[in-house]
Amino acid sequence: MSELPAALAEVVDDFAAVPARDRLQLLLELGNELPELPERLTADHSAMEQVHECQSPLFLTVELEGPGGSARQVRLFFDAPKEAPTTRGFAGILHAGLDGEAPETVLAVPDDFYLRLGLAELVSPLRLRGMAAMLARVKGQLRAAA
Amino acid sequence: MPAPAREDLEEPWMTLPQDTDPKLAQYAHPERLVTTDWLAEHLGDAGLVVVESDEDVLLYDTGHVPGAVKVDWHTELNDPVTRDYVDGARFAELMAAKGIGRDTTVVFYGDRNNWWAAYALWVFTLFGHADVRLLDGGRAKWVAEGRELTTDVAERPRADYPVVERDDAAVRAFKEDVLAHVGKPMIDVRSPGEFSGELLHMPDYPQEGAMRGGHVPGARNVPWARAAAEDATFKPVEELRAIYEGEAGLSAGDDVVVYCRIGERSSHTWFVLTHLLGYDKVRNYDGSWTEWGNSVRVPIEKGASA
Image 1 (cartoon, rainbow over the protein chains, first blue to last red):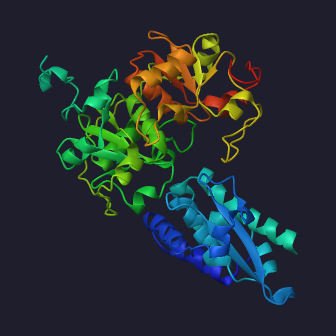
Image 2 (cartoon, rainbow over the protein chains, first blue to last red; image 1 turned 180 degrees about the horizontal axis):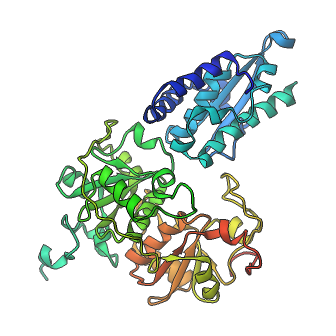
Image 3 (spheres, chains in turn yellow, green; image 1 turned 90 degrees about the horizontal axis):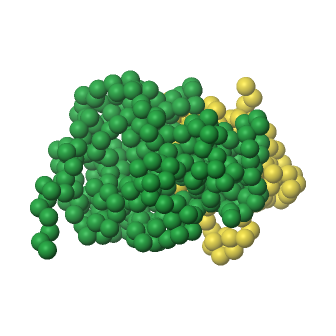
C-alpha cells in the first residue's frame, strides 16, 4: 500500500480507530469542520467545478499558493449544502487530509485511498464513488494548473 | 351532513387513529397520509414508530423528528449480496431492532419530497406490513415549519416481529413481467433526457451503468417529482388526475407498471397511483433501467414522450 500524506493518514487512522457505528459521527464532524467559502468564491460560483458523481450538488476548486515549484501549497475549496451531510463529510476528509500539501503529494494520493476508511458497509460503495470523483477532479485541476 | 364518526373511517388494520385533516380527504386513501400537525400531536404514542429514510445517509444524524428511527435503503433494505431486497428473516430482525412490531403504525418521512421514504414504505409493503403511512411534505415541511428536531438517537426497546416472507406478486414487477406488459400502461418516471435516451443517468447524478439509453416501448414519461408541490406535499387530487390521466392517459382499473433507474423514484409514483388515486393494480419494476438498459435483446424505444 502506498504511503498517504501525514494529515490524510491521520484521518484514515481516526476512522480505523473507532468502532463502525462511530464512523458516521466522525464523517459528520469532518463535514461540520469544512471551512466556509471565501467571499470571492461565493460571489463568483462559476469559478468552481461541479462534481456530478456526487449525489448532491458539490462544487470544488483548487488554488495554488506560494512562490513556485515544490514550495507551492494546494488550497482546496468545497461547497456542499448543509442538507447533504455525507457529501460534506467526504469534502471534509479531503480538506482535512490534503489542504496545504504540495501539488505532487496530492497527485500521488492513491485514487482508491477511500477504501481504507472502513465506510463502504456503512455508506454503501455507490455513495463512496462521490469521494473518488472529488479526488479525481482535484487532481484534474492540479494537472491543468501545472 | 355531520362528519362521520371516527370509527366509521377507520380500517381494521389501523393501530393509531386516522388523520382526518380535510386536505387528505380528497385522496382515495387518506389513511395512508398524515400531516405534520397530526404527527406532532401523536409523537410518543404507543403503537407508533416514525421512520426517517433519506437519500443522504447522514441527514438523520444532523437532526430528526424526536423518537424517529433511521432506516437506510442501501445498507438495511437491500440484500448485501444478491440484487434483491432482504428476506423475511432479515426484515424481521431489522424490525425487531428498530422497535417495530407487526401491528405498529409506521409513519415514513424523508428528504427530497419523500423520495426514499416512499421507497422504504413500498419495501415494507412487500412484507405485508399493514399500517404504513407517509408524512405529507416529508422532512422539508417539518423543518420549514420550525418543528422540533433532535440529534438524540432513539433507542427503542426491541420488538417482536414475525418472519414473514416477502410477497412480490402484487406490487413488484420483474423483467419478464415487463416484457409481457409491453403495450399496456407503463409510466417511466425518469427525467425527459433519460427517457429519450439522450442521457444514461439522472442529470447531475452518477452514471450507474446502462449500456443503452431510451425507454421501454410504449411507456409514457411523467417525471416523478411532478406529483409534489413546492412545499414537498402532494399536489391536490385534481392536479394529479390531470397529469396521470389527462396527460399520460391512465384510467382507473388499469394494470400499470412504473419504473425508473433502480426503482426508487418509481416507488414514489407507485404511492401516488395506488394510495392517492386509488389504482389497485400498480407494480413497481425495481430492476428498472439499470436492468433493462443492460439486457440483451429487450426492445427499446428512443425519443421524447408521445
